Length: 430
Image (cartoon, rainbow, N blue to C red; front, side, top):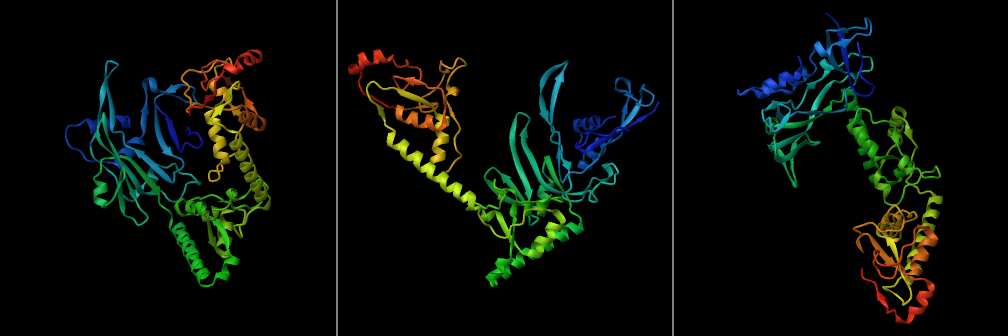
């Protein structure tokens, strides 16, 4: 007996002794006669015991000899969402040369409910009790081998089916879904009755507490807050994992709910929190959507820095350089990160060092080919460059007489002094 790798969800049993599902699929799909085949037929053939002989003989660990054997696949652990891919595209070749391909358009029956995978599971103590799946979504390919269109069909919370065809969404019937030329099928493991009842009870308790708070606002002071994202996992997965509130814990290891993130939390009663916490663990407990005072002070200081940098750069920036002065080339990507940082609405992260090395070849001097002004780089005057470089460092310095990275660097100081009066004012072209 040979087990599969941990986490792959399947194993194989090889029995030492003295045909495959591909031939089954080929026979049914290559037949000229209409034939009815179901997903269960395909699964049974896929998991069917297979003979290993000839060049495929198995080397037995016990006798250390290659023996005629049988091999059988089995599932070790069932996924919560199972994807079945129906192989509808066939690649045809003759004498080793690819001759193109074709599409198999035969209809494959698939159940909307009650797809039981129990017969394909390897018996184990850790096996989930539930082995029954219900169809969640279907992807259909319309067209031929060389082109076509994909359409998705999804079952909504209300049990109705909806067709998603690009921007168009329309409701369809169960019978229409069952007539589809299924390409990919998505099945969800059915929750045991106990789990379904738990979900209903928690949902009703949350709704009732919201109604009570509306009628008596003072009850909100006794509320606990829980992540809406975790509640979604609780509603749709059998094992949602520990309650995860790390998104609301700051670097000071304190609760911090930034402005606007209150909508990511659901207010619940203390009894509901106790029930969920005792069963799933996690945390920490959020008794109110408070903000960390240290984080608020740091944010205020960061906003002052944003305003200060924006102001001094704006005051020093010009659309030209004076005679005798040079342009300083700066990486457009880096400049965009700085602009996002000082933008009042974007409030991007603090930029790293200036990344002008992106514009140069390995020698650190020669510009790369194909750089475009305004797209790859921008030009700033010496004052602005000095501000950026003193705050962020990086580089290297790329100094040019013209606002063109491929133009010549400026002459030496002595040459600049001799030609100062002959240089006209240069305007920046953006």
